[in-house]
Length: 119
View 1 (cartoon, rainbow, N blue to C red):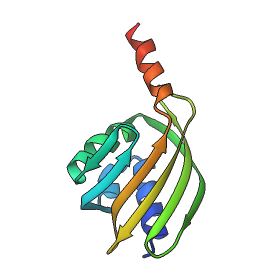
View 2 (view 1 turned 30 degrees about the horizontal axis):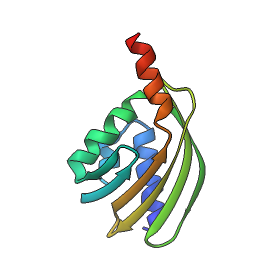
View 3 (view 1 turned 45 degrees about the horizontal axis):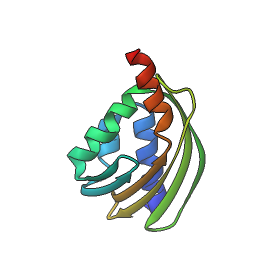
View 4 (view 1 turned 30 degrees about the vertical axis):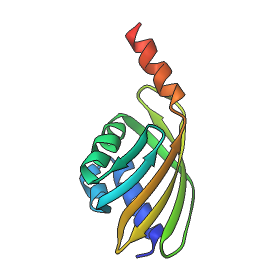
């Protein structure tokens, strides 16, 4: 499988609400760079990503590019608290598993939604 194949399978699994299947594509030693800071290891990554997958209502893949070791996905999401939350992921794959993931998204709409719920 190419990096793009792995990235798409991972993306389809977590956006399809099958997080266990998604984690099969994640290396134990994954390093994730997220807007909230670095995340190291599969369990820490699960703690970061699984809660988001649970509030996801729908996702639309906008673009997907890759080669043997790197993939780039851009997608839009609609979540329980935020109607439009676009994101991009730069994914590095080795031996069929995601070893690095850099995710880019705007945290501000989620911060505002939490603040509104607290009011």
